[in-house]
Structure formats: structure tokens, C-alpha cells
Length: 173
Image (cartoon, rainbow, N blue to C red; front, top):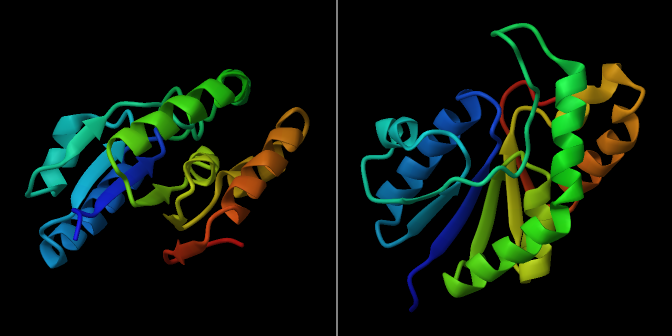
């Protein structure tokens, strides 16, 4: 049987998603020591290493932005919208590059802590995608309205593209 390889896409927003996902992947690795975990996130490697007690691959790739913040509570809507547009403008190139990476590395499953682009990447690679989170970015952007409304619809469709969703406590549907 070939080695199971997981492509684990984690939002680039803060450390909470990365620490949660690294904790889950640490348990996956304990239960299935042969699995290779590939973290796809701009979260720092030292942070992932703090939670992972075994070998993994770190691929620093921005698949989403979450919310741009100037401090721990202040959300910058204009900067968030600009970053989201940049990601959308490069979406096709990003998907193509990640599909190539996935195929070259014989990945068998995509797991995402909420970057909606992960479902499009998985679909293009012909792989299943599971999502894990306690919310989706569409929920966070909902009250912002305006220019984010059309992006919000795209974000929701990204979540719908997953074959399964692991809802953590306080999931807002």
C-alpha cells in the first residue's frame, strides 16, 4: 500500500487555525504513523513544530487571507478586500501550481482549515476535500456587505465544494 499523504491547507489568518490543525494532525500522525503531512500555510514553521512531534513538510503558500488586522481586534476591511482580490486574480495560476505539486507528491486527500480555495484545488486534482473549522469566512464577511458580498458568495461555494465538514464547537452555519 502506498504511503498516505495529506495536503493540509490552513488559513493564513492568525495562529489559532494553525495550532488547532497541527494538534489534529499530530493525533492523526500518532494513530497512523506512516502518513506524511504537508502543511500548506504561511504560518511559521516554528509554530507548527510546537504542536507536531513528528516529521512533516511545510509549504509556505498563501491560499487565503482571512482578515487583515492592525492589532488583535481591529479589522481592516479595505486591506482585506484588496488582499482577497489579489488572491482571486491569481486563483487559476495558484490552482494549477498546487495541482502539479499534489500530483508530483502523490497526495491522496486534502484537508483544509477553511481556505475556500482548497476545494477548488482538490477538485482540479481529482481528490476529496474535507474542511474543519468553527466558522467560514463568509460568516465573518457577512456584515461587511458592499464589495465583499460577491466575494462572500464565492467563499460559500468553496465550502460547499468539500465532501465533508468537521464542525468545531460554535460553528455558525
